[in-house]
Length: 119
Image (cartoon, rainbow, N blue to C red; front, side, top):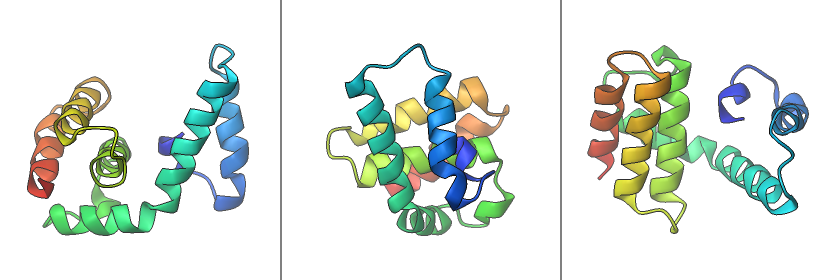
């Protein structure tokens, strides 16, 4: 859902969230609430998250980053700075693992380097 955010206008986000969730295997009410709540919390804090990322990724403007890497970094920064339930090391590890699966060859090192600056 967060990846789709950059490709759609603000007025289309709720429709995109519903479309994404409809592709899942019938999430429970609790799962639906968790997914939409988390997405909304990240979007609400996106300006702060992007400011943190801009500072940590010296030499890289956010609009020059690959969309996959940027999405993973945004999620990780949210977890590191705004979600007290997720330990920082876990957020970093998950971000690196996601980048191995969905990013390019240099994504894991790049993401680990940016997040390490935040710690």
